Length: 264
Length: 367
Image 1 (cartoon, each protein chain N blue to C red):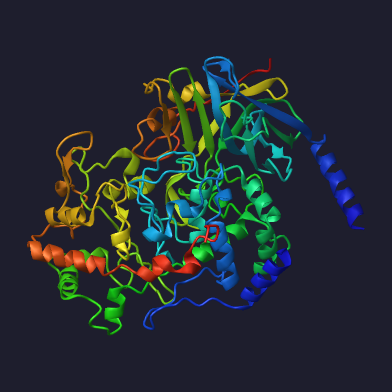
Image 2 (cartoon, rainbow over the protein chains, first blue to last red):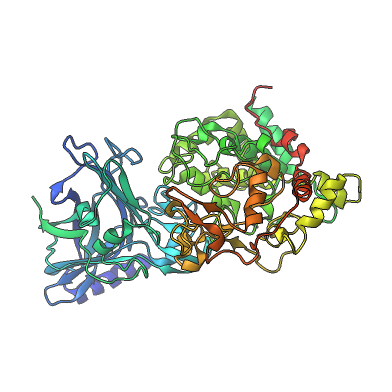
């Protein structure tokens, strides 16, 4: 009886929408100043980490309307509105990484022609301040939880070159209350990403870590870093690349960490 | 063997847990979802001292929190399992069950269950280095005979008791059991007026005087203003800038240790750190959040001056003039005798039974 009701409802829905939703895969690749980069790269630059959360993924149809990409919940990397992307393999220089890789978003969207992708880099506030030891995947990963800042690392990324390097941990700061009972954070530090030319099925999302240090003078021989703190010198350029105001943690420009290009 | 251990834990589970406290003291508050039991404390003690909880099997919680040093490590700044230097000194775990906030300058950390995750899983700096390796901890809990027997007995209602969550709960319960109220000062308060020397008694008067102001931040039965307990109604939390640095003349602290400012981003919070307990302070040198003051005599000299003057080097500056300094750090003058008396009082806060208590000792250590 219930099964029939569901089937009838589904049929009605399909009739209303015309076509069934289609499956979409959105691949991500890591680069440094445009060049592909990996943990075990033999060349000069190597990835040391690249993991991040995204949510509210939408595709823009040719009429200009944003359609939600419903992620395929897999009890591992994705919930319906939140995903952890993991572009490091634990090999080579990614000493604190994991062998598991998750380099694409997978979900369904209403059938249509799309040009344009948007998402938010981060974890929604409602999910950001719970107990990580009780959270459902992908929020149960201790490496992604930022215990002393009271929420998750939205992004943990880094690279090394011959004579220097950089890493960043991005997450909300200035949180008030106590862990598991946070009322708000003065610097949310969530990044809005809009890739206007992205065509699903044709393009990949490019994560260029070079953007995080563009214009910065890195210290030779040491990996400089940014832990999203207020006094941190190297957060200034990184936050600019993320389109964030370092003081307020609010969007203040267009991010340049993510871009899109035609899949090779 | 496993059956015997399991039975032992089962028997202990049937026993509740009771702290050994002076009559006039309230019990610590305990999170509702992690009640104390003797079995849980015993399990937590083993986990606390187990080096297999670190990435390279070198460090346990007890490496940086050693019983002989009132659960500190004697270093200016802690060193993690992989050798990475921590920006801050290991804090004493004595009476942390009574703290309203944990660690040096984190307003978010109220419960030991939450705090434990930073040393276990944090990676900047690496302490235990287990971030991303939670499955290895679960494997250990499932394979070690003692844990295999203890966890189902301690957490009988759990379908699967072999979880990081339960390990953390047990460690927190053990740490909550580390209480210290058996110093000469405590015996004096309890009515044994001979417990303090005449010098220490005079030192006590100085300590609690408006002239020295020590007790404003190091007040109450636990000698810190961030104290809570089962009867607490008001959240009492104190963070204080004590004038240790003044890098730029406008109050800056070294960038790796800006204190509460790093958490809030508010300039007025620059250099504010939580006042640690002074219990067993004789055993916990060197002092301050970064271990930059070597002896108790130096600490007293710092407060006498009302802030520290660093005349050269990268940290040069006059901390006395730090604009964010606590209003209670005004400086004072002591005679040599008074200085000696104050020191005698601080030494009278040492609880030798704590450092010898077998219930708090390392179960893996050779007898």
